[in-house]
Image 1 (cartoon, one colour):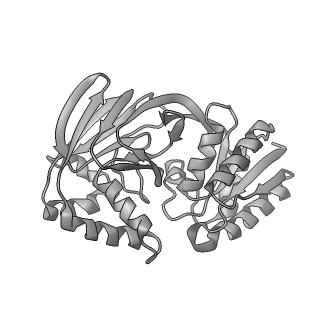
Image 2 (cartoon, one colour; image 1 turned 180 degrees about the horizontal axis):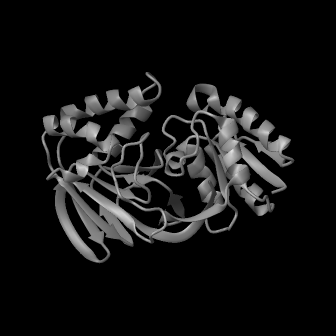
Length: 289
């Protein structure tokens, strides 16, 4: 590999992004790679830079940041054959978790870019948008909306506080789902659509999802009590919530999710208001890992 583009969110992980970029770039250059470093002033400019890099025949688009930065890079690289690499420096880093990429050592992550054989994986697609991890479309999305309005605290604690705040009005949501042509109308606490198994820093809501099987994993959490949610929440970190009677799982190629007043999140980013149709895009992305 002779030339890569390193796209960075310098503010990710409380400023780790800039430090990790510099360390990773130094290691890549020491290996003889020509590294072009770029960063956008906002998400739109970052996406423009990513698309320009891919169009300019860079050999790889390496993303230094959290899942939000990976999300941006994926929009540019999907379907092009240009592989992405990941130098994780965010809070959740779920995509890095999928590939066991070191999350605290940018030099070791750069070594994975240098040594990695491109792995072809699926993406989830809705219209022209893609995501890699999980689409949150229920209580979890409502928590994200609240957390994004909060200025304090930072990191995972902000989401924990937002969760506690939303528990005060924790009620089932009326959904209409189309699962590969089968229509379901039901009440549920959340519906999650997984390309991968986890989101939110290791919450394995769609436990068992495989990145290259040609399917999406749809998880429904049916009505449950507030104490039941609090007891079940820690199980999400190990994926052991799958035995709960409120848990329901489907593997589909396409799903439409409709519910009133819900704005969905994917890869931790605001994705779009429901209803949304999401389909599997087999083999859409190559990852150096």
